[in-house]
Image 1: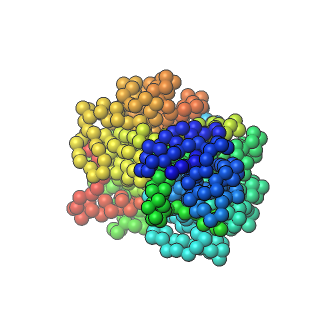
Image 2: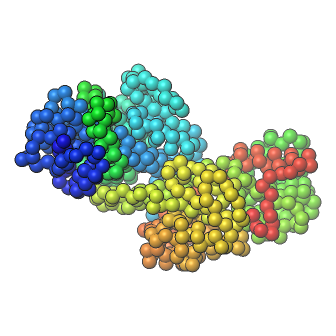
Image 3: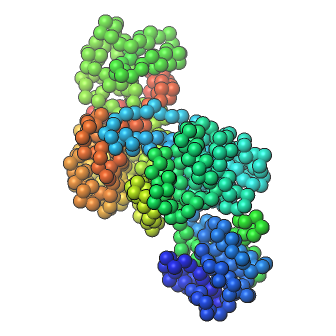
Length: 308
Length: 308
């Protein structure tokens, strides 16, 4: 069995190759792909080039080394080959930490206190009722439930929106385009956790931001292309939004001079909300190859038509 | 029955008097104390003057309108009169929010990312294992358990230190002066939640800070006088401490020019970690007066000798 791995040049791929080799229960050739490599049975890829897939005529499956597959699906992939993405791999806990931090920072006004501190200004604001800061998770996939649980344990009221109707335990789920307005109206702290697809691109725009509770807060841990950046800036500047914590933007790295860097109501971080953790990721990929080789179901399969 | 209330001049005491009157199941005169007021049966006090107690020869009990009673016990109080403090009154949840924010901000390096953002600098740091950031709660009273639970739900390993030996569920408790070193050695994020007493004053000093794991973090939600400020600054400047979030300092309000305001490793907030919430506080005080009038036990009694 041959496993071809593609990682971007700036990434240290050695530990990944080593971990896949070590954990694989079969005899397998695991190698970093180069243009003269023989065709492989399985592909493990992060930010791959088109040439990688053009050289793979007999793949049995493609494994994304991340949760978001928008960049992967933008390529021309071999027809009919199943694509799998990472399902959690330590990312849900990291997402929960990031979102809890951002939600607490806003609701407890630490952003304002930091600004006061810079000026040596001892000013107390009256405490805010936590009930006035309901959190709405836009997107409720495999990462949604642990995030909701962490926020609830801090006392936040949490609800969510998903494309399809379900009845998860422990929170109210709005669904479909009909449920989106109701979801937004009920939300003061909006968290974007959606996959990036043709349907969700540009979903954070004037029309959706206007429907949030006034003085809302926006947290983006998904993709920059979910957001119409000019509309977000307008909502911050006219007061409809009180602030935003953004882990992503349309062009990454954000160029110097991008208006997000120095906006007084924005905290921009360099796409660090949830990092793929090697051990967890390799364990998932190896377990999935093992399942496929035995003729069993593998988990995390992407619906290539839906885009996630 | 007469209830004399003392609140500092800058506080709006009207809603407190109204709430106590409304909720009291007995006929009671509830009034803001002034030097010509008749002697009262019960005192409700926050930051009271000595003159207030000098004019009370026949008190049955004294209720502090806060959790910390160090300022109250520093006065000469009538002998033998029991003192009660607030036990939670909405403060535990607020403390948990504050500490969760500060712990996440440090462990996830949001302080560094904020500094990078100010310079338009897209730099990612490798993720840190959460297991390397055990939280130690110094003081484990009525607020400790909900705080520990909130931190644990975010994945933090939490242990605590208390003066007396107990065996609480769900976390390791060190105790006594013998257990203090072991507690500090096991701690990377130290949270001071102690009452201020003659024994705990100046407890955060070079000797204790040196025993923390290197690159430790300090969060103070207790009192400024727990801390030898010069020792804290020295530990920050020599790298033993990586940072501190301080809600209190020895002189409050912190004067302009205090070294805590602009220190790059310190976030100072104006004593807002946990604010007494009127409804919860009044409910406790009224329930306690009711219990005492019926000859029952009241809760939150302070050991005047121990100081909390």
